[in-house]
Image (cartoon, rainbow over all chains, first blue to last red; front, side):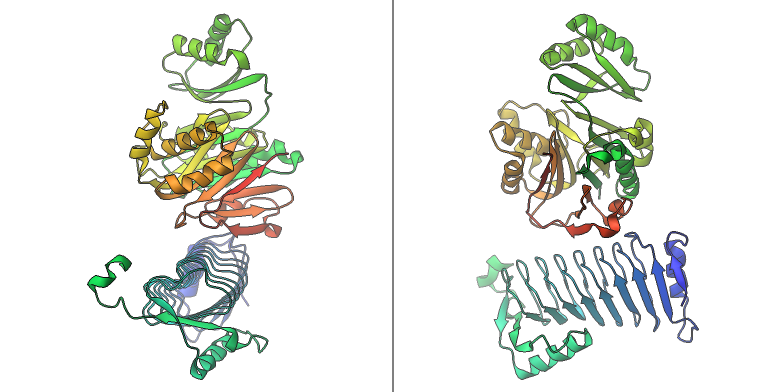
Length: 229
Length: 299
């Protein structure tokens, strides 16, 4: 397995090397050491490979990821997995704000807490946060799922479209047009499947979650809703 | 943009290395603020003396000669330490006003940047790592310090617009963000008798905190009050003689990462600024919560 030491190799060289990999590349496992909070580590990868990073990463780690499996043995800065298309990103520490922002697909797993605006404007990504999420999470989220095993901060799901939110802990407040909805067996099955994919075992009972989603009152302008815009 | 770094030492044996650690942190934030840089260091001092940090018009300012003239005027010895365009004059505390008057009378191009028992402030236009080198930050000692790299938005790139801002004895403020109600608040504070040096929004925040503390609030309470009265985007780091505090606005879009070990508490706009510190791998690292005041004090 090639090891890339970011104290010795430039970030551009690392990312260029990862971008140059084709489907039939001989090396499929990469180990990155000494990230020291550098930005855009393993951003823009489009190959079925595994990249494991030891240490804390900076902004936009794994941004635009397609197909790659990225594991961070540390915490991540702002914009983790931003605009992810597919693949899987697993951060074993915490994530700063806007984790999974605008993501179109794939699975993002955060073992610790995620900060504000987690899953903002999500468009199909599935996000599992084992800790809590901060304020304004899933703001204007269109599709995909946000699953939170801990608590959610203020204004969860503000102006949400059709993304599904599942929170096991408390929700400090719901944003405009976000309401609690019933948790059907179908939702429980979806939840179980995503938790299994995220490596969360049977010790977590899916019936402990509450589901939140759009009340669909703000889709079209209505004079009575003026205060909510 | 802008970058902030802050370091508060819990372990006194690290105090000789404060400047070196702070310089390393400041250097990582060059690209967040290439316009100007500044820093405040809380070094040695006692309550019987006041340290006045002076800024000359250029490195040619003859601070030794100026100190001689101030000594003659106030009738007491003045200790001088020169760092490039800046110098620290240490004078007996009761003669601070006389010393300020003497400085103003002798050399109109010299500006008093800060006053305090222990605080010294240095700032200059230019790349932050070069600014730190010019003042030899790496060899400064102290218990805590704050640094700032500026990307100007609300006012011009000048030394006066560089951070930190100080408006009270041993008090300083650095800021990442922009305030939207600074003009209205400046007018209000002017009516309360405060005078301003610049058009800068951060100077307003510094005066605001000084005013709250003059009204009897602690730094922590003053920061709580600012959540109500200041409108805009901000992360503040505030230094006082005994410690430092951190506050993010309720929307919290300006970044702030904190780290704590048995030896220190450190602040950085990004984790990169903290990554250069010894023992960071084992530190507790977290992101500052919105609208939450964090404060550490020396005991």
